[in-house]
Length: 160
Image 1 (cartoon, helix red, strand yellow):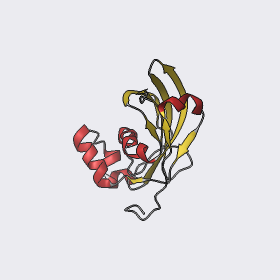
Image 2 (cartoon, rainbow, N blue to C red):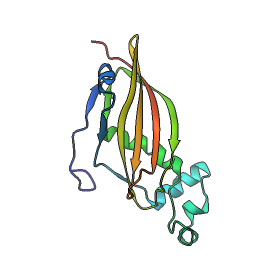
Image 3 (cartoon, rainbow, N blue to C red):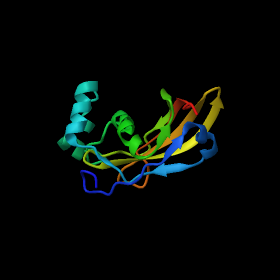
């Protein structure tokens, strides 16, 4: 059991050499993280992302969305916390190259829980490594994802 009482599930582990053969595969986990008021305020303090829609509950309640929202960049950053609970890639080393096509199709509300789904959308092998692109879909309480982003990573293959 985890600290929040949910069952521990096995996280798929894929070798970097297997990624090209797994293009189109998607992975998800029931693991979630609570995006609390304190987390949003800490993020606002560190980054300056202190728009009233994120930090002022009373003013946000009077807005068309009716609640305070989570900054999109915080949602995206929480992928680093969620990813190890969804998919592990076995490799000698990994270099994060960045994100493409980052979108926020639906609001994420302060106090809700966030989870991640990962789909392998491409994997190009080269000498001793593979460049993989993953579609990360972040979900909260609604019917649409709160963030969709393509993550680019180069993995150096483990030595046989």
